[in-house]
Structure formats: C-alpha cells, structure tokens
Amino acid sequence: MTNVIPSTSASAADDSLDLATDALAGRTLAVLTGAGVSTDSGIPDYRGAGAPARSPMTFEQFLTDTDYRKRYWAGSHLGWKRFSAAQPNAGHAALVELELAGIVDGIITQNVDGLHLRAGSQRVVDLHGTMDRVRCLTCGQYYARQGIADQITETNPWIDTSEAFDLSPDGDVEVRDIDAFLIPDCTVCGGILKPDVVFFGEFVPKEKFAEASALMQSADALVIAGSSLIVNSGIRLLEQASRRKLPIVIINRGVTKGDNRATVKVDAGISETLQSLLLRLQA
Image 1 (cartoon, one colour):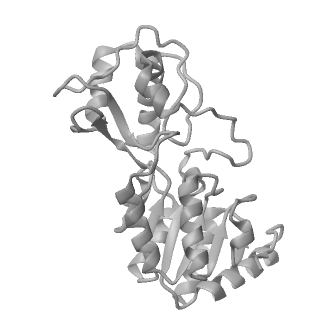
Image 2: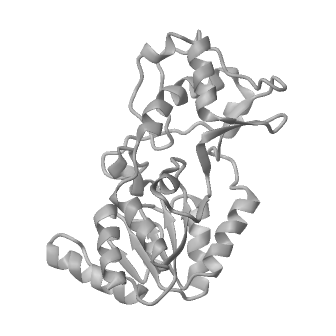
C-alpha cells in the first residue's frame, strides 16, 4: 500500500520524509529523474502546474517533411542558447553527494539537458539522449552541438533576433517565421542532421535501456524524482523494481502513473526533498 502524505504543512512533509528515509535506509539506490528535477534550473517541465499544452514533433514528421525540419532546427537553435546556459541546481548537487557517499549507484535520466553530468554525477544513463550532440542519420557522423549552432548562425544571421515563444523542456522554442531558414546538413555526406535525442514516436535505443536495466538490477531500491511517468521507458523501469519487490519512493508534485505502486509518495519540491534525504540517509 502506498504511503502518501500531502505536504500541506512542514509536519506533513517531515512525516513523508520519515517514511521515505525508513524505506531507503541502508540500501543502494537507483534514481530515475524526469523534467521536474531541472525546473529549479529554469527549464520548464512537461506536465507540471502551469505547463502549456504541447504537441511534440514526431520523428516521422522530422524525417519526411522539410518544413518540419526547418521549424525544428530554427526553434531548437534559439532554445539551445538558453538551454545550454542552465546550471545544475541543489537537487542535482544532492544526487552527486549521495553517489559519492555510496548510497546512489547511478542515475537514469529522461532529461536531455546534461545537467547531472555537469553537476558531477559519474554514472548517468541518458535514456532519451542529450542535446549537446548531433548525429547524421545517413552516415552516423557525430557533431558537437555548439559547432552546429555556429553554422546555423553563420547561414541564418537573422535567426538570433527573430520572435519566438517560450522555452520547452527539451530545449526547443516555437519560431514564428521559418520560410527563409537554411537547415544544417552533414558536412561529410550531406545527410539529415538530428540532435542525438529520442523524438516522439522513436524507441529508446536497446543498448541504453539495457544499461538502465543493469543499473536497476544492482540496486536495492528505486527513487523516482520529478517524473509523472507518462513515458513508457519510465514505467518499464518501475515495473522492474516492482517485480523484484524493491522499495519505491516517488518524489513529485502532483499525481504520477506510478503512485499506486510506490512504497512512499512524497508530494513536494524535488530539490529540497533530495537535500533532506541526503542529510537523513548520511546520518
């Protein structure tokens, strides 16, 4: 039975943290993180309170339609400047300290912002890829994202002053005028370039999910932080933990798809909760 204590007061929040600490104490943890971990770094989440409705571009649209690729690359270029400037927050730092203490064995993240690695986490499985790398879909050549950004600025000098909407969790923004935009191409073969992330309609690479599953197998408990578990990859990892009857602690503001299978649900902010768990589990 899930222990859920609404954190409407300091005492209620302490009660839920007590339950989470009891469930996790003395165990080696795998941590699955979602967009909610990065909101304190200024990157919005997908489904939290106030998040706008989104219709993400599918991989098929990107692959088959030049106008979609124009729209994606124009928006992604503007978003990259803000996205790449984001800094790790206290929640990222707490996870680093938990790993250094030998409590966290590794982090599986659905985020593409690279903030766990920049914070100093050593073992990170980026399930959905990373925005700081670009791959040619034809020849497989990889590029640093900054190099592609420089190329876009050079061929589209007007783009940096164009009007755009708000940043999304994957580093994209919606640009109003893309007719004149020149799409970057692979300099090796002229093929289609795509950020090395999983688009809507794509599958998580088998080797990435195998890496995440291996981390899960070596853990004694699972912490899920900042994910509503809408994406199938997260649910599959939750199911692995549930089948092994591992303690499962979910930290998230609002309902998630895994709440009924959690040992403890902490309905509170991610950064402050991870910092509190750090202090409690190290005690």
